[in-house]
Length: 404
Image (cartoon, rainbow, N blue to C red; front, side):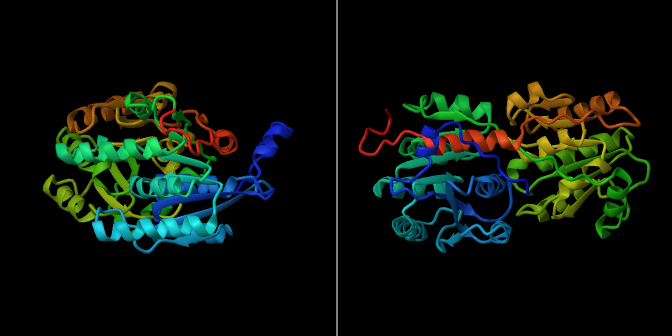
């Protein structure tokens, strides 16, 4: 892991990096699930790149997963909150709130950085009660954008607004979410857009990557010489993978040769397998399951597809750009990325016909022999620097009215 740069700008800023007692500032990250997705990667990157001479990172979580192992390997302290889960459950939510309250009381953090809706909602209230000096909330896609019943969406909207009101600063990683956040009552001055950043993956060569993929038992039937599409995503409804399957069926009906390989696992795996059979694309679409460091194998492919119906700004798109792949995605992703990155087509979500047409057009444009020139879109150092500046300078609203 690349060492974080010294982000000090002046003696005055260095002074603000210290807690009132002269020690390093304690930054406590709170997240619902310690599995490994975009929010978890965000927490890992921040926690492992903080300047250690000025900050002491701690990560608290509910559901155990890969993130815990990665943090422990990086010598980052972790705290388990047993009752904290994603689903709404009154008794366990009350229990988890008091566990969070006790944790904050014992750790006495200078900064609480909240991630994921459930943990953020409970954590913001607990942090306010204990007068935590700085409360920062990162939105990885506003949850009220999801397709739900009207009453549920209104409840989620209220909880999102309430969390942001209780926080001193709300970070958004997408221009769409910045616009939505600033439209919410009394939040316009609290919303800060900080694009996510990455370190360029250590890509495997095209031939070596494809040999690895062919050796995976699920992919043994993959056709040699056909164009290769790839998706890296958790198998959840928000990723819109059903529409990619339907688009694959449309391409197959037109006699277009291709294989589409999906890296990732999740709750919808069985449903997607059924959908693949129903649309008769078992010879075209392959669910490869979770593969560690899947992005390193991107050079094996010709096109990256992400058909999300609800999104913030996914890391995998930045990795696809770094690998030189053209991209077909949807307007659910950060519009700034779509405007700035080259060779990206974004269509309306949940539209398999438009998705299929965009794939055909993109493959016509793509060189048959070379990847597109890779360009770094958002460096990790820039994301770390801007976030650390918030830790140092975020307004301390203790005792002040929340919306000011």
